[in-house]
Image (cartoon, rainbow, N blue to C red; front, side):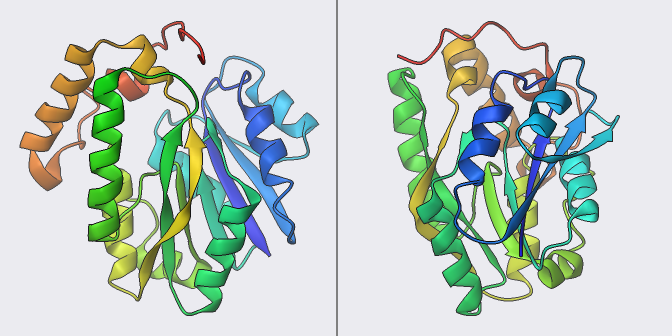
Length: 233
């Protein structure tokens, strides 16, 4: 059985669509939403759509993913962000990768609508680089349960960049693959923050190297009060 684990904070507007897409995966599964400190109807909407909700109060995405994994019963874990739509084809490809012997993997992404030109360039470069390095963004990462346990789960010392460390930990225990099918994730951060804010944050974290992301300071793109999204175009 596949356990889909979705970390979520104040995602009542998107969580329903995310859950509905996963229900079309075509294989035995469960969907767990780790509702982290939400003040809206995220948990209620998720339960209405058939997900099992685990409530935590951490405001920390790595901790939310770990909480969801602890509640999961499946032999395969698939971590999906609350603003990401996963095609059934991506799930099938991930299952085939696990059956072929991989311990885990991820996927490339595309945005759900209009984003600034620099974001399209940045995404193309990151998808290529992650493919070469066998890494994945956090919006879609899958692994065997035993590999998750061996890797120690998501490293809660990190507030951002935790997906890179998790992928690297999985790779120490076997083959990590990046599937060809892409998932669709929200470009809302890129529509609601300026190029200066986004690129400045990325540069600052990049200059900190592998220790970047250990402090909550300067992580407003991920943990700050969400601005109004300009919407899909």
